[in-house]
Length: 168
Length: 200
Image 1 (tube, each protein chain N blue to C red):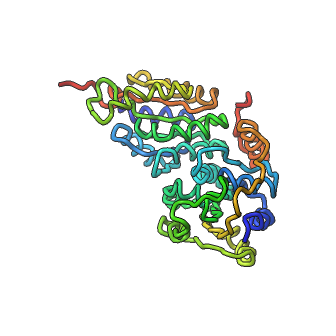
Image 2 (cartoon, chains in turn red, cyan):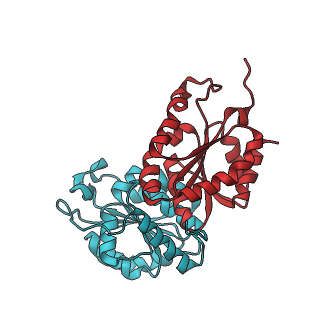
Image 3 (cartoon, each protein chain N blue to C red):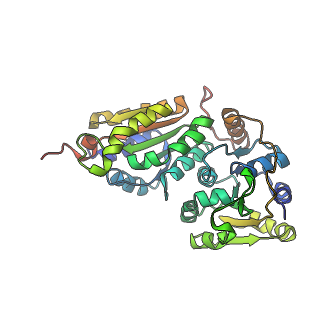
């Protein structure tokens, strides 16, 4: 099954009806799917921290939401995640491409690969990696964990999941 | 006109709108005027009260949402106007307290030094109903139409900068307490479930 279709289906199972997004190339196909979903309000944003704050506001309207972005974008909004979500204990569920992994042969992604998880650990933001298609069904548990922990939760999507095994 | 005078007029015309305040001066002055708990007083994330208010307005289309932004915060997240223009939230009223200084830190000169035309920028971003208002009588006259007209409505309140620090104390509730006060207020007023059966 197309991993993007399966992720979309799991987000529906979570009751997500609002998505705020800014793409990198790995999550762009997911964003196209969300944009085409008539049951979902899609909010394309100009920078990733907008997505964080939009989802935080939507929380108070009783709406389940998701912020979708690349790993580079996640690093740009750590200040807002800390001073809005950590400070007020507002959950925000983020789906993020796991850039800079050992199979992501892009020099401009290697810092993200080395330093993103240590940054999340410094802020005490939980994260989980979806690496194989059979793990996509874990998304509702991750969503519930985000609500329970009342803070940003980062769900990484691996290259292997989205692009398959890289050869050569 | 003074920020406090503007807020007293807004409070009188509010008619039950949920309010989101940018951090610092806007939040402190609104608390001083209203002490309202159906207001989200931003404690951090400077610039992103606008995005928070947009998310709230989209999630709760039956609720009028008023955003009390400031020009310092707006300039930190100007892209919010393009996002707002793209979404066209009918229930959102966006006010910008424009004193052309960073008032909260003692009226320090701010980016652009007062040259920017925020209403023109908003119109360029797709928010057609955008205007500056420079005196209290004009605000009093315009508020009913701003409140009743189709959103988004964008209003720049051209206020006088105060000399130095204002000294208005912030609202006395810490982050999580304010979250629960605001969320429970939304639940009571609009019949939605913000929190789950175990309270989180």
